[in-house]
Image 1 (cartoon, rainbow, N blue to C red):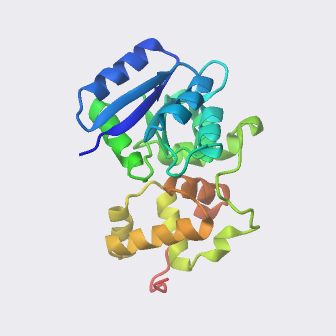
Image 2: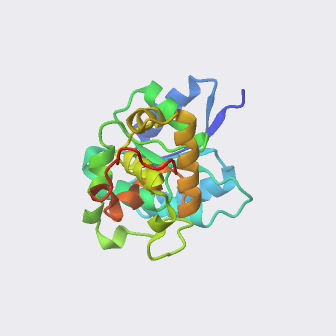
Amino acid sequence: MTAVRVLIADDQELVRAALRVMLDRRADLEAVGEATDGQQAVAAAFELRPDVVLMDVRMPGLTGVEATRRILGDWPHPEPRPRVLVLTTFDLDEYVHAALRAGASGFLLKNASPDQLADAIKVVAAGKAMLAPGVTERLIGAFAAIPPALLAEPPHRDGAADPLSRLTRRELEVLVLVAKGLSNAQIAKSLDLTEAGVKSRVNRILTRLGLENRVQAAVLAHESGLLGKIRRQPGAAPG
C-alpha cells in the first residue's frame, strides 16, 4: 500500500509536532514536510507535491484561506492537485467557509481524535469531501455572514445565472440532503434509492454544476436558498 503523503501547515510548533507524531505512527500516512505560514505552505506544496495538505486557517502573513486558493488555483504541475483538509476550531467559522469556497476538500476540528484525523486524510486523498460531524449544517448555513473580503469564487463554476436549473427534481432532492451533511446511505434511505443510485446522482450533480466535491455542492445549495425551496414529493420522477 502506498502511503498518503501529507504536508502539515500550522504556525504552532506543538501542533505541528503532534500531527507529525501521529502521522509517523501510521504506515499508511507519511509526513513529507511542514510549513509555519501560508507562504511557506504554498511553496512547500509546489515543491513537495503532497497528496494532502493539512491547513490551519489562521496563520501569520498569508492566511490558510489564501494559501489554499493559491495552491489549488496556481498549481504548476500536471494533475492531480493536492487535496486541502482545513483544521479549525469552533470560533473560526467564517474562515472555514472561505476556505471551502477556495477549493478545500473539507474541514476537521482540531480536537478530533488521531483515528478521526487519519480517516479524514484518507477520505480527502481519495477525492471525497470530509465535513466535521455535527457542525456541517451550522457552518455552511451561516455562509451569508462571511466578511466580503474573505469571499472567492469556487473553482470551475462557470458563472451561469441559475446553475441549479440544470438538475432534475430528484437531483435537487439529493443535493438538499448533501447540503444537510447526510451520507450516501442516509440519502438512499430517505429517498428510497439505492446507495449506487445516490452515488451516481451525486456525481451527475457535481458534473452538471462544474464542482469538485460535495462540500462545494453544499455551499452552493445553501447560497442559493435551495433548502427552503425543495421538499420531497411522493412519487417523484426517477431523475
